[in-house]
Length: 577
Image 1 (tube, rainbow, N blue to C red):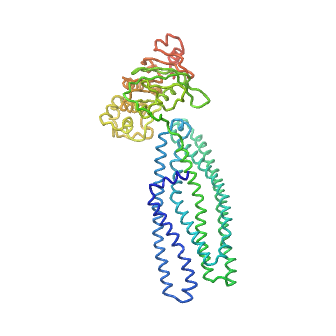
Image 2 (cartoon, helix red, strand yellow):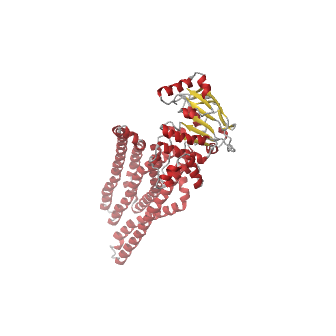
Image 3 (tube, rainbow, N blue to C red):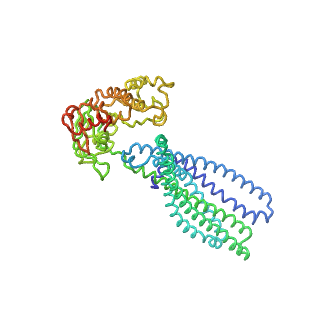
């Protein structure tokens, strides 16, 4: 994992080297003061070298000015390196998310994924900036101060520094507890983000059912979990800091006792004793910095580990020599297809369907029978395992084709329309970003939405809000149809595209869909008879099997499940799936 982290430094290698050189100079300049202090007390003051005293003071001041500039450089450019690394990680993660299969999103909440992209990577950024600098400055300061003290009096130095092994043991002991606690805290934070994302997205449902108290209760459970995890994390951190601070303060006790005895015995001078006090503080300060760095290190490592967890998720697989689907006619075939989302239940079993170019096939049947699953398999959203049959487009197994070329030639209109934050134009252009203005207008006309758009003050530049909240259900549906018109695919999937609409709106939508279906091979998950009766063929899907197949008239004459569903719809004036 360390190797993967270091690779993000490579584009910033030159700036990192300058940053480290500046940090090194900061450490070296820090040792000037105790050296000058010792000379002041032992030489300059006793020998009344007044001009040298002034010169030494001016030199120290000049070096401190230089140190101030170096600290500015380290703080500013060090953070810039961290931010750029964070940006590259965020881009890599977002790019990788686009390549992950549907199964990943089935099992991971949006809020938790967002936490990985935001707060987790911020912690990584802080580690990327402060980590190398703190390690270098603190390490150099510790080595220089220790070496300098040895040159004054080795025995006194070794006596004082007997606390170092104790400090190391204490640090290692409490660091393990901190690591576990902060991992739990980060996971709890992800749960809160997921709850907030879910609640805000569904705020209209919450208000409609007056369930605000229930949402608050759900959020409170997640928040209590976070508070509990934070309590444990900060308990571990408090033990860590209290114990390590106590050990470092023992250094001062050793200086008072041992240094006082050495001074009393005449082994060292008052100047040397004063230098010891100053230099040991120079040693303790970087030690405390390293101790504080452990917390930051733990946060950064936890964040990077969670980043790596997603980066290690396998992206959607393609055959090594996958071919591009070209000159698409649109013939579709499901051959002996068996499929399950997990090992517990088979969704499709030995399904065989064949649809010629330009034909329309409607799928009907009870909810959960496998209709939508068939629609998901055609664009290869879920991959069929070897030996579980095959899905063919123009006689070619989709496992041998590139994902991009398959999906470029398939248009999908769903019941739950997803529109992006932005303008009407931007959402239609999602079907083909390089389309001309006139092509956008034509797509909207064919979707029966152009006239409505032109009544708006800003027309096609009207902002539609999050998920198209400013539009009605029918308007959103027609925008999604315009998007598919612009894409102009050879194959079309209509997944209950009109099921959530009123009768009047359905007429407008159905006209647009009929226009959209012309010349395209169409797979329809049927909900209303207006869609079914226009189909060239109808298949009844129940419990993962095709139980009936034929035209509307043929299935009605067969007196089977389809006729029962048909009769139920008209008897109760209800709809079916």
